[in-house]
Length: 133
Image (tube, rainbow, N blue to C red; front, top):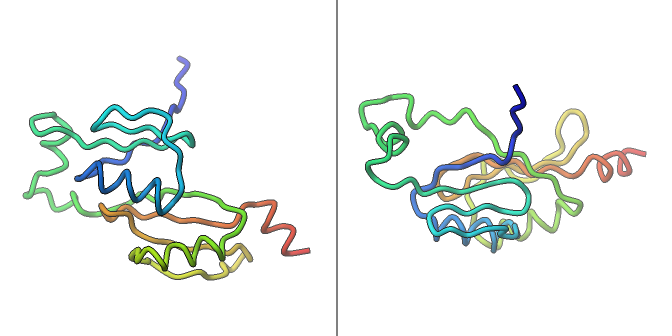
C-alpha cells in the first residue's frame, strides 16, 4: 500500500470569503481554482461542499452535537511573526490568542478563519533557533 498525503482540505461555508481570507490576509498563493474547490501552493485546499453531497449532509446535521467541536489545527510557519501579527490585527481577524512565546521559546499566534477553523502561525524553526542563540 502506498498512500501519500496530497493536501489538507478545509470545508468552508463561503468559498469566496474563505479564498479572500487565505489569499489576502494570510498571503497564500492559489495553485488551482475550480470554483467551489481551491488548492493552494502550500498543500492546503478549501472546499465548499455542495448540498446533497454525503459530506455536506454529515457536516451540517444539526442533531449531531459533535459537528461544531473542532479538534483540528492548521499549523503554518513564517519568518517574521511580528509583521504577520500586525497584519492579522489590521485585518480584524478573531484571535484565539495574540502573539506569545510558548514555554519552549517559539513565538506563536492562533486565530480563527471565517469558518472558525483554528490556525496557528509559528515562527519558523530556523528563525526560532537563531533567536534562541
